[in-house]
Length: 292
Length: 307
Image 1 (cartoon, chains in turn yellow, brown):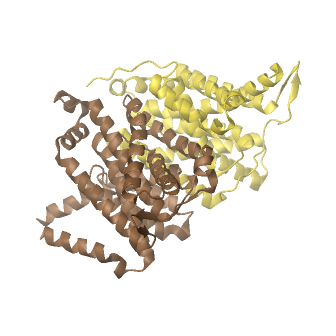
Image 2 (cartoon, rainbow over the protein chains, first blue to last red; image 1 turned 45 degrees about the horizontal axis):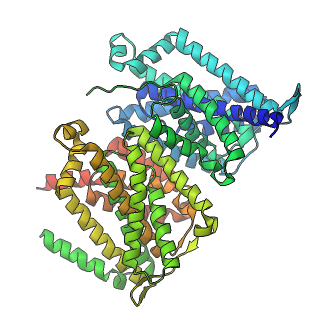
Image 3 (cartoon, rainbow over the protein chains, first blue to last red; image 1 turned 90 degrees about the vertical axis):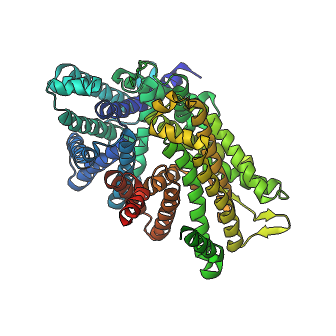
C-alpha cells in the first residue's frame, strides 16, 4: 500500500482516536472522583448532541451556537443525574453505582428513541468531508478538524486540572478523598463538578463526531471504545486516556488491512480483553497497591 | 406445612400444561430457562462478587452447541446434548475465567461485556457452522424414540432439567464449596485468611456459572426452535443482570422470582417495545436505590415480621 493511502488511514484513525480519547477522559474524570464507571456516558453524549441538533433544526442556529447549546444541555444533564440519582446512592458500593448508571443508560436511550425516534440523522459539520491536498498527501479536513478540536479541548482540560482551584480540588479528591475532605475541600462539590465536566467533554465530542457517524440513539455505544481506550492507557490516568484513545483509533483503522474483514468489529473488544489480561494497569498506568 | 406447600406447588407445576393454554406453557418454560441462567449468574455474582455482563455470550454458546449437535448428530439423546452444551460452555467459562481472575469490579464487568460482543461476532463469522445472520432452525429434541415437539413436551423437559439444576444449586450452597463461596462473598480477605483458595474457587464459580448458563442456552434453543445471533446481544446480558438484581443477589429463590418477574414484564411489554428499556432501566435504578437486597431480602423481612 502506498504511503499516501497509509497516511490517510492513520489520520482518520487519529480522528476517531481523538473522540475515543475524549470519551476516555470523561470516563476517567468521573472515575477519579467517585471510583465508579459511568455506563451512561455515551447516552449523555447522545442526548446533548440531539438537543443541539433540535435547536439547529427548529431555529436554524449557526453551528457554534449549536455547540454551546449542546454543552449547556450536557452540563444540566450531568448535574441533574449526579444530584438526583448518584448522590442518593452514596452508601452503595461501586458495583451498585455501576448498575445504576447501566439503568440510566437504558432509560436515556429509550427516552431519546421516544423523543427523536431510533432513526439516523445527518448532522451539520464545521469541516468538509472532501480530502484536500497537503503537499503530496491527501487528508480530509474533517479528520484534521476533529483532531485539532480535540487537542484544543485536551489542552484546556490540562490547564484546568493544573492551574485552577477546582482542578486542584479534583486532583486531590482523586488521590485521597479523606485527606481532601480534611483539607476543607467539599468532596460533594467535586462529585458534581466531575459529572458536569465529564458531560461537557462528552457533548463536545458528540458534536465533533456526529457528522461522521450520524446522529442516532445508538451513537452512545462509542463510549465502550472510550473505556477500551482508557484501559489501554491505564485507567485513571489522563495522559493514558489520550494515548490509549489515539492508539485504539489507529489500530482499529489499520487492523482491517492485515486481519480478515470479519473480525474488524471485534478488534476493540479483543484488544480490551488482551490488555486486561496481560497488563491491567495499561500502557502508562501504575500498579495500584491496595491496603486491607 | 412447608412440605405440604412444596408438594402442592409441585403438583400444580406437573399439571400446568393441562390447566393453561399452550402459550402460557411456553412462557413458563422460558421463565424456567431464565431462572437457570439467573441461578448460574448468581453463583458467580452473588457469591463471589464477580459481576458479569457477558452471560448472553455463554447462553449463546450453549444454544449453538445444542442446536448444531441436534442438527449434525440427530441420534444423540437430548440429555447428552444438554450436558455437552453445558460442558462446552463451562470450558469457555474456564478460558475466560482464568485470565479474568486478576480483574475485579469494573474491569471484570468490562471484560465480560467485551466477551459478549466477541461471541456474537464469532457466531456471525462461523457461518459455515452457524449460518450467520440467517440463524438456525432447531429440530425437536429427541429422547430415544420420542420427539419432544409439543409445547407441553418441551415444558416437561425444561422443568425436569430445571428441577435438577435448582436442587444442585441448593446443595452446592450447603457443601464445603458453597461455604467457601459464601465466605468469599462476605470478605475475600477474611476467606483467604481462613484457608479458602481464592483463585481456585473463583475459577470454579466461573465454570459452574457458565455450565448453568450453557445448559439453559441449550434448553432455550429447543423451547424457541430458532436461534440467531441478534437474540444474544448485550441487552440480554443486561436482562440477566436485572433478574438477579430484582430477585436478590446471592439468593436462589430470589433468582427464580427475579427471572419470573423480568420474563413476564418482557412478555407484557411486547407491544410497547420502545418503553421496555425505559421501564427496565427505572427498575434497575429503583432497586439499587430503594431495595438493594432485591425481592428476596424483602420477603425475608416480611416472614421475619410475621413470626
